[in-house]
Length: 486
Image (tube, rainbow, N blue to C red; front, side, top):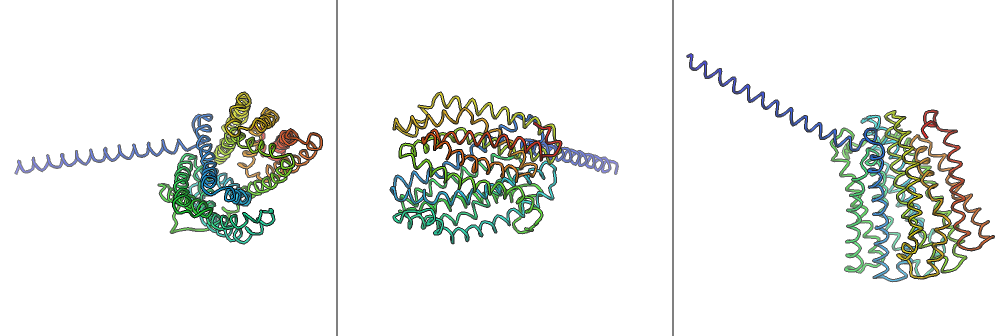
């Protein structure tokens, strides 16, 4: 009996040790899991950590996304130009303006999504973030379908209004009819990737977009070279790749381990959340469309100068991407950074981030511009072998590049105002400066010079106007705390 009792006691002790060890092991695993989640969240949380490092690391994938977007259009044109000929290339070019307007509007809408989602993320308001994601998903589908219906009806009217030549009109219509079907995917990708970036993750949308870009190359080859579908094949490749990217973003949001993950089987629409997004997104979208139309006027004046001059501005705008895309990425990073910290009430952190973005960004842009001017013959030589075109392009660069740093300051100030929900003011100022002042200056300078110099001079004039007005507006209409941030 004593022996049985001793064995029973030992068994109890042994079981107790095992239970204790299991509890300790479970606790260790739980602690490691929490640490891993904290590390993951802190890498995305823009309200903590070294400010300059956070902004730069967040901006780099945004720059990568812009480069990938350029790859989309460039690959299409390469395949069309190499395998389908001049008329097919021209038909795609004739469709570009309508596509730019449609995509540009919803890219602006994505700014609204980014601002509101980042604000909720900074506040740690998971319930509102969940409502926003569900609402944006439903609004994206509805907006995309409406855009498809609108574009399918107005595409022929738009091409006729633009004076599209008869020999390419049919090709352009066939291309647009299919391309437009990708708009639901484009809208969903832009809006939902804006949510992901708002949560401090700019890397995932870039990787998903890269996967879509690689698929686009493969689909272009299959549709154009193998199946010989013509310009319709290019449009089909775009629909396939954009739909793939959109589905990847949706899958990513559904698989998140947070309470605000996307649940496509339990969707609810919240009008108040959509209203908050529209307040910021619509002005940004309208700004994009109006600037696109103002560029038509500028192009019409360039077209009066001659073939060499037209070619020189084509080269100039391609080379300009080396300056524009980095500062655009910095502006997009600033939206997420300021919105998150605004939501978290981190005013001092916003102040430091603004100083880094404005002064550091402007200094970087100026240094890059000077470097590009030093190696201008090499840069321009990548795009043209014509000595006259190269000389004209370098003249345009010398006129605008020394003052290009102003664009960085304009972008950061505009991003700040949007982050605080004041999107109408930068919209009005940029439209007035880039469409009104620039066009008036263009006509005036063209009377005096009637050369590429006359066109180029209109740009610094409009930048100066926009910078002055944005500076005044910032200190007039922003909250008192915000006025002390710069």
